[in-house]
Length: 302
Image 1: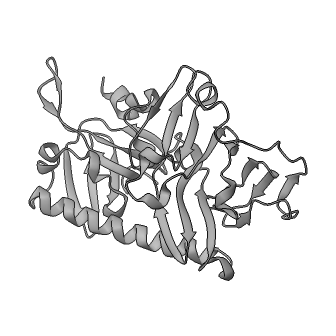
Image 2: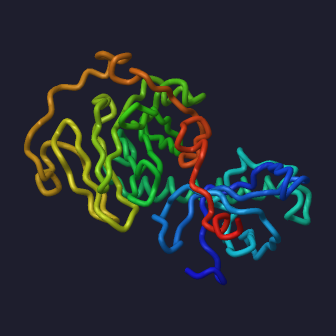
């Protein structure tokens, strides 16, 4: 996608004005998000733009222009929780609260669609009984996209997760109690290490939520290492992570039983911290999201 048509930005929001006494004494607005379709940048890479210079709305998309780039920000991909209303008000003509409500409706509509899609990916006998499905993609930060829990005939959808920033390796925590107000997630516990090469390894596995399925919504294969061996999940495919799934399993070795309460402090919190937030790619607490990569335009403009 070229600069004329614009780069796609997901989980986007407009940040507060930043002050620069030398060049911008009155401050300026910038755009945050995860970029897709930009040459030289991995899809899903978090970034922020150089100063916004103008904008326009085309149907359900906010078009943002910087001096050298154009970004297409779909309403359904917005992150209204981090939106700075004062900054946003400079780039839209309608009242800010009404506009944010419109963003929320689009986001909710997309989440409902994703929930229905994930439910349809489960075997029919599991759509109304008990199952857990994780949606991973090589394009997503830490590979995580969303998860669906089916319990007692009801489906519960979430895009939330926590990041444990380790000294040598970050890890992802799914379903710890602090994440959710809804008690359906109480006691829910899966954790994994995301590695390069589209590979992730679970080190805490909640057997009470089995059967566990993985859906790959990306364009490349993903390797998942769990107590039942290593599995390859091809693009667009859904696999159950179980010993009997010999078709997708590439490693017959079975990991020792994982006790999710064993050495919690030593394994999970040695010298790091946990960052909370939503949506997934835009945690403000972890160090790697405190200072995301800047738009290359800024290097050009300096």
